[in-house]
Amino acid sequence: EATKGLDELQEGLLKAAKERLDAGITRDASYEEMKNALQTDEAGVYPGAGLYLVPWKCDAENEDKIKEECKATIRCYPLDDNEEGMVEG
Image (cartoon, rainbow, N blue to C red):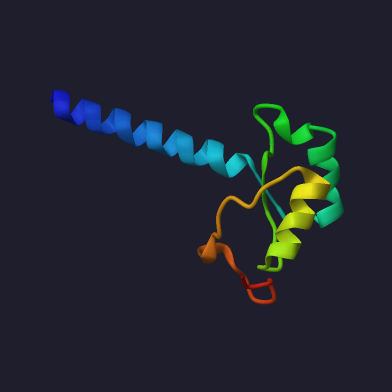
């Protein structure tokens, strides 16, 4: 009985964490929208959209430009979210 309760608790915590993560991801933002939100620190407010899922060119020059202009860093490459027409990298 205790194990069942712990399993249910764990499942609930995982579900809540996934929902919180998903709610904090901005999709379909333009570069300028992302840049503006990051520069005005709108993305730093919790709970806020601090993560942006946007296509980008996979090269060091492009990444340096993002770091310089947006003060942002590339965190991951969510290959499962690549859609037809998005930049692959």
